[in-house]
Amino acid sequence: MKQSPADHPLAHLELGQATEYPEHYDANLLKPVPRQLNRTPIGIASGQQLPFHGDDYWTGYELSWLLPNGLPQVAIGYFKVPASSPNLIESKSFKLYLNSFNASQWPSWQAVVQTLETDLSACAGGPVRVQLQPVDHVNAHQVGQFSGHSIDATDVAISTYDYAPELLQHAGHERVTEVLYSDLLKSNCLITNQPDWGSVYIHYQGRAIDRAALLRYIVSFRNHNEFHEQCVERIFMDLTQRLDIDKLSVYARYTRRGGLDINPFRSNFEAAPELTRLSRQ
Image (tube, rainbow, N blue to C red; front, side, top):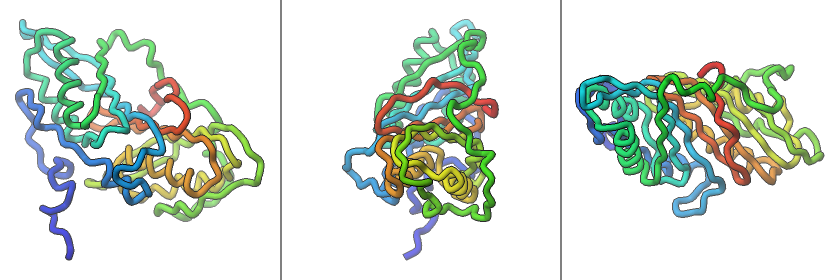
């Protein structure tokens, strides 16, 4: 039986709906999306130990609130949501939630941090860590680029823009350790079909990946509809299931929308690289 729109598991989200922007703080604006909705189709069964660790690193550029004397404050927020949490946080609800701070008074910056951590952890179902920095203290986060070798100049003809994991193949039998990246990742929002632009970093140890095939595969996400976190986990699973790879990290940094950027990292052997904002962010 065809599922009605009201019965769809994501029907409660604000994405694609006419929106009234909040005038007062409201934690109920946050909407969770169960991670398992996407994990089952890519081969991760419910209750199974995850084949990776990692976090979703969010940056919030439009965060403001009032002090008790009515003076507005502004900050850049850094949010770390564990991949082990049962839910990801839907991005538009996150934006609306942050906007609900705009006209509300808070006794201190620390009170804002504690409230953010409490609310976001409740939505994600796991411990979310929050840092707020004054806009004039963010000098350490300069614009940079991924380390490693860009595959974007590979001489390759491309005609497939629909998700095609079968494109992946090896370059030979040599086992290597290398870092490859591409700025040509583009997918579409699962709900609104709006384009999501990103750069993807792949650090692996194993049998050498054919770079032309990898680029074709990354470009094949161009018409694919999924959330950022889901795309990164799909790439991780495709590479480990279809190729002879011993160790793997996949890290994507997406351009911002609504004052937020989302940067998921998944690995089976290392911590995330230094968090550097890319030129398009």
